[in-house]
Amino acid sequence: MTSLQLGLIAAGVALVVGVIVYNWVQERRVRRRIQEAFGKPARSSSGAAAPDAAQRIEPTLAAAQGQDGMPENAARNLDAGAPDEGYEPPLAIQARIASDVAEQAVADLPSPLPVQPAMKAIPGERGAPRPDPDIECIITLQPVRPLGVGAIAGGLRARLGKPLRWFGRRDTGQPWQRLRSDTPGEFFEVAACMLLADRNGAASRPLLEAFARLIGELAPTLPAAYVPPDSAAEAERAETLDRICADLDVQIGLTVLKTGPATIAGTRLRGVAEAAGFRLADSGAFEWVQEDTGSVLYVLQNHRPEPFTAESLRATDTPGVVFLLDVPRVVDPVRVFDQMKLAAKRMAQNLDATVVDDNRRPLDDAALNAIRDQVRATATALREVHIEPGSPRALALFGS
Image 1 (cartoon, rainbow, N blue to C red):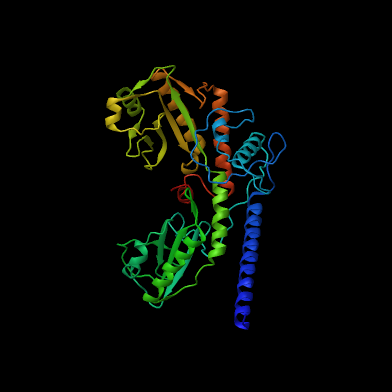
Image 2 (spheres, helix red, strand yellow):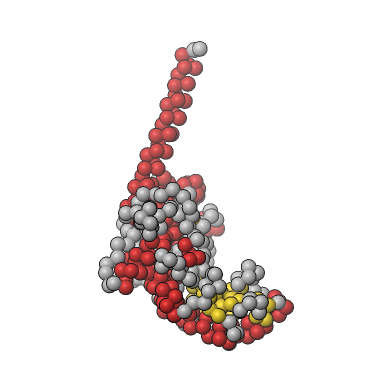
């Protein structure tokens, strides 16, 4: 065997060892970031560490309370797995916050989103859309001369798997302006922003690298200077952000169900729903829309897996319906829950049905108040980590 072959073998071994060490270091850093975000591990009622939730919580119908005071169906969203030191599962967070709120105590909440200093607020920019460095990977382009949106048309049309937003400003100290294909004028600075996490999960490192390549290919054509992001660090940040949002991704449902084999005729249901202010949407559910803002406060969907359509409502019936509230996506979730609860009770009375949990047990006022506490606890936790319910930030993080 020649010295060249021996050298290549040694280099290969060194490379493999280096990759293994690098991966170990990255894993340690991710775990440390997660522990910093969530504090001490939660304990279950039996004293054992709560199981780790491997994925973002999917939409759930939280109604009845189990023995631990949590909605029974929500508890089913916790995936079984090995305990993860430093991780506190969402239901434990909500239970703890609800208890603290009731006792008027200060809750031991998850750490807020780590604030990134790259984008400072500018006078006159309050309330206007702007880059959000806390939840987006941002690459700023500094063109040699002001440019119009036509120069970045390829970037505006790009689709990478996570929402992209483009902003420009006309001078230093001027507010950012959202850029679209028809935005007039020229801009001396441009910011490309990719969302780090949503309900589809965290932005992966390959996705972040693709984002950096997109900007790297665009910049020379302008021309413009830019600093590429650290894809590994951004991927870490995306995972931590996704974990925080997973703990607070809560949807609450109230089921209105007929007793026994009885069903509700589709035409009857549509009439009652529309009289209550609902309108049938293309999504296959009835939506209750706030007139002032045009925002959907809650929806009414089929108890069966089939979506509602105008045709199906004329031809079929259903045993019941589900009122569904997406807590992070509405302003003042407690008030909206109170409104939804009253709507569910009225509909149950009009349809000679009952408001029940997932096990078809009637929900009394005590159970409904417990669910209300969970809504309030979740809203409080969202605000504590700098995610105001119903805000553009919340709509981005809890969208898909």
